[in-house]
Amino acid sequence: MEKFDCDYLIVGSGFGGSVSACRLTEKGYDVVVLEQGRRWTPDNLPKTNWKFWDYLWKPSLRLRGFLNLALFRHVLILHGNAVGGGSITYAQTLLVPPDSVWNEGDWADLDDWNKVMPQHYTTAKRMLGVTENQRPSAADWKLKDMAKAGGIEDSFYLTDVGVFFGDEGDAPGTEYPDPYFGGEGPARNSCNSCGGCMVGCRYNAKNTLDKNYLYLAEKRGAQVHAETKVVDIRPLGGAADGAQGYEVVSEPTWGRGPKRTWRARNVILAASSLGTQNLLFRLKEKGSLPRISDDLGKRVRTNAESILGMRYPGSKQDLSTGIAIGSGIYINEHTHIEAVRYPRGSNLMSGLSTVLTGGRPGMTRPLAWLGALGKLLVTRPITGMRSLLPRHFANETVLFLVMQTIDGHLDFRMTRPWYWPFMRKMASHGDRIPTFIPEANAFAKMAAKATGGVALSSMSEILFNVPMTAHCMGGCGMADTPEKGVIDRKNRVFNYENLYVIDGSTISANLGVNPSLTITALAERAMSFIPDRDNNTRELPEATAQAVANS
Image (cartoon, rainbow, N blue to C red; front, side, top):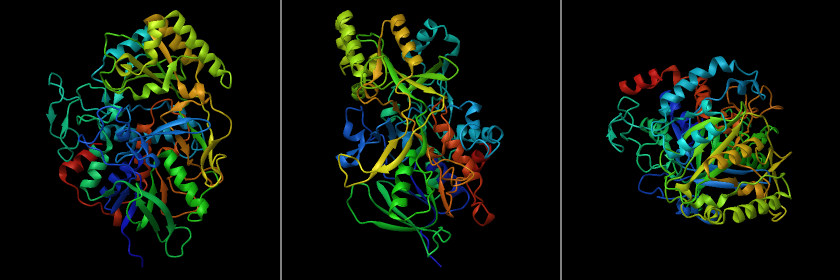
């Protein structure tokens, strides 16, 4: 008989990991969560993203923040690392995708999705405190003006978000006892519209996972170990399929201190699409988990995404106030645009933007960019120069997050980079996905003319011929056989027992909306298949039990 450290060991504490930890502790299991990122509090969150060493994540460069920028041949991916995963840096926009997404990809016939998923979306919304934006501000009204100019004003809406706004009439920042879980959750403060959601909310208003799912999990006994990186997972007891559990080896993220070995009956991989793929590739290659399906890394999606913007140099309106994503529009049935902002002073990301550029993707695009830049500087010299400088970028700019439901994907695999053939790393392969979205560029060009702004493109699409996305999904597809996917309909890894994947890597379609709510709902569904320990749920405090029952 093996002595186990826990019933379930969870790798990662984002939406999949935190939901799993919460529900498994409810069911009476002993849970350990290993998270390579830091635990963030109002005391250590950066005030602006100019404090890049506490904002950007790149361990090899000793950057210990929570936002990673990963450049591949086909795409530039932004994703989070922290206790609470991407919820620390995401814009807390929580939308349900169109029903059509369940009819696409290999998961289409695995469940009656349109019948099953609404209940899980309802639970996810209640746990994440979803409500309509109650702090619309200048950037949102700018987007509405643009929509009106384009004849699509009727599509304008205020976003559903995970933010605590408090009671109408109370001053922003007012403290309230737990408003969500009958007193079992933490006290909260109402939103003060600072716009700082994506730099980390320092005012206790954003419904990050460490204030709901993960908070309740820890309260019920889950152990969360921050700054701890998993480097190996091997089946125990000579059972190659993991039927006798797993040995998990971790080490400090920053390379200081000894490795630690954990023994777990079950393991859940919830390290984000990129993180889980990378870990499984390495475990497959080194022989720790050699039976992982060869479908690993296939059909990785970017939400068919593009990031544009509109800058108003010298604007008297402060476009940085409000919440990070406060509103959206639909420019056609496939294409969705959201208004995004950073807080005043957070101008670091201005380096990823430049003048709107058309042309064709490829080697001639930089020439088109130089032409667009030259035209701007000749026709609007002062405005053009101001639009290129980082100063005041946050309070003069509305960023556009553009997403489409149109399908398209790329593949990842492990290769030796030409510049350093002594190592293997994950790289993108396959046909290129669209570098930019022509109809979104056309809208930005029209909106700039109508509102007097300077339209912006992403620098990555011009210099590297790659789009930028904050929503990497897929790579561990759900299917009915290991020839077509990595996991089955219940999130169990093919060819192994007691091993699961529950995160964004399981999504099999471009959602056309921010994926966090869908990842949460899918995690709720996955947890519904796991029975209570000994068929007897551990007794919960009455108020918590009632809140869970209501959700």
